Length: 374
Image: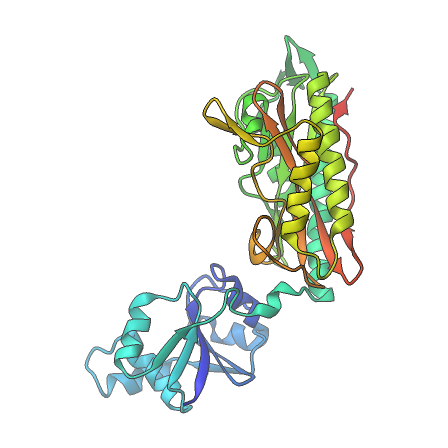
């Protein structure tokens, strides 16, 4: 039995395929790997560009395989063409991603191929970021923090009128500031989608992107996770601001979150269990008088994970700092983002990315952690 790793997808949708080939294309193409040799099978539209750009051992034109399949069947299906390609190399067993197209896989099984589902990520080495990948993520973080600085400066330049923020003569809303952030990043080669600028009651729901006027003396969560248009690697960071004097309750929330994040970053190192870090944050919050519970039908306290892996996807698996057991590995890049959310008080989240080392970690990029903008 000769086994091949097999992907049929578009690299714009499939991070594993882009990781394997470093080739961008909007349409799906065939990739397979026999031993350590990588193949990509493309049509005439993409083949010349692939020969210049794709990091594979051999580029194949799909045309002769289509003709061969047509000689055996008047209207060949996709599986007929794939069979011509693989049988030429003696392949009779496939390892596919968990989201492989079911119709194609079922047809290949009918042809006698043994098909099994591979790990996730399909290339486990994605979990350990190379020096090049670390650099890509750091560049994304630096661009992100430039956008964060612009957002903070915009809040600082705003005027307070009737408890709301006004910037250059008109209301400063979540949507307006979010657009400013996204345009700022796009002009610098980064695509930001679903940027969070949430204030007041919106800020107590961690993934509420926010809407409506931004208010003074209230928490404003700004969570930005842009993707580089040149490297395709993400950045991710969050800061919480308050324009004007913050209420005492919000100050206490912020101090608790800032301290918890510092503690968590200090616990990150290769071999550490993400679950223990996550549980330690819960215990710290509880000891500070910030329990996690359901009250009046909604969650309050700290009710999301402490961190997730990031790279070619904004949330990569299985590296996590949460209730799931996961031993951190050297080369992991993860977020550390504790938060507290209480209706009537506000929401606070502080997030940075860390690169895991044998004894500790490096924080990627730097931006001040200061609540009040006076």
